[in-house]
Length: 249
Image (cartoon, rainbow, N blue to C red; front, side):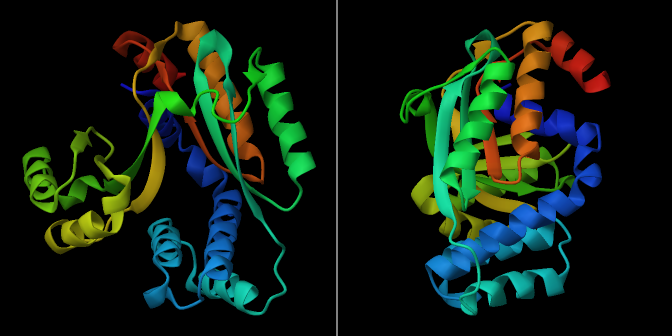
């Protein structure tokens, strides 16, 4: 099981998202504002904005918050956010990619570097680990969308590349350029998705023991707690016994 999915599943089990809902809404609003400012505030005409709004709705973000984030961009009074990607190595040589939206590159770079350093890792140059990941689309459906066979059949019909079903959700992987088309086809057969977005998917995993896995999880948690950080991806891999311990901790 790859690090990105492991981390998300563990955090879901711990109920971590409930504890940081306001921070989550803030990050979703920032993505909506950036998407609206980069294109048009019309959801129907702006694919990136449409995805951002749909993902916000999937997280139960209030309609007023969504409209306020769009109007902020349309009004021209929003901060100018830069999209920045950081790459580095965490504990145990685990490759980590960090995506951020920031209005102060120096602040964000300093913070991200400190998280890596404190974990025993190191921030690298651009491109230092990205070659170990594939840029793909990820479409997540709740278990209520259907059983694994139904979701697999729908994914194949829609032209997706892979399906990962577990006790938490169904994750459908598609080519980066096909995200919108596949998501639209799946909505017809499975209903509304929990999220639709582009992710960095590890090509292979870096095996780590329980101690190193805990250190990697702390690094990712610290990164995700930063207001400027939008997404974190890592290629760590643990066996099922270790995963069970981490989930129960």
